[in-house]
Image (tube, rainbow, N blue to C red; front, side, top):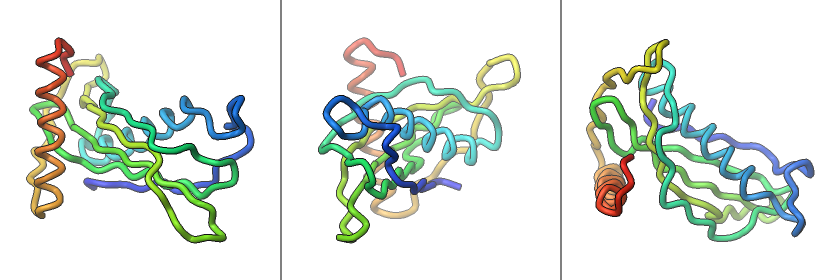
Length: 149
């Protein structure tokens, strides 16, 4: 499976001091959706190696319907680059808006934490190709800046 979408309601237990969903909670959701996507692709346990380019566009309100979509963008030898987009909206209005987006790198590992190879992802549509190019660009920029995803 190269993509997964989690859907749920933003609960009052996730509120921050401003009365909206806490950014750390959104980051947890992103990691969970990314993990589900990576593990489904690799068919084994995966660990988060890098989270980058996270951007919060707008807050999520308590009671909103939330969608967290994780899509495989690019694979390396043992890594999977997952693009995650979070959308939310009031169910009565029926309009979902992008709230957050980021890129996560997961690594497939064995029971001792050693990296294991993953099947190569071959983008088949223009949208998948564009997403793969975007992921590669983010990784190249991170490496050039001294980060090693």
